[in-house]
Length: 145
Image (cartoon, rainbow, N blue to C red):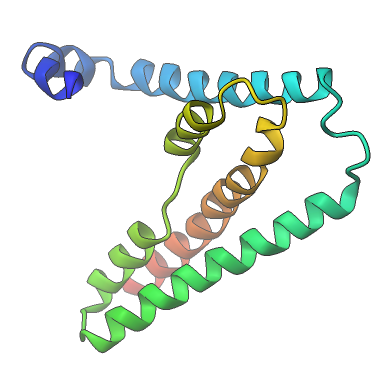
């Protein structure tokens, strides 16, 4: 709410310095993730959790990602969206980011030393979004041009 109220005074500045603001925004998120992982290592949260934890979480994240994309695609098909609208819906419908997930997790779980384990699925999901959606964007851009 405060951001929306401050928008008339800040919008021009933020627009002029968009690259720097974006860099600071991503840097803060990266620092939040980094500090949660440092805390978890310090408290021994990762002891006894091997590669299987990472593989199971990665597999579940991949399954969730493709399930969401498939559901969005099917809804678009049933509603007879144009190809352009389908593409927009697929990209928007699968988006869950670290930018929203990390602050919410920190508010919900506070200084819990297991926060990095809690964040692992969203970190993997976010990486999948970046990789798969950039591949899809290039593929669809080539097909539509």
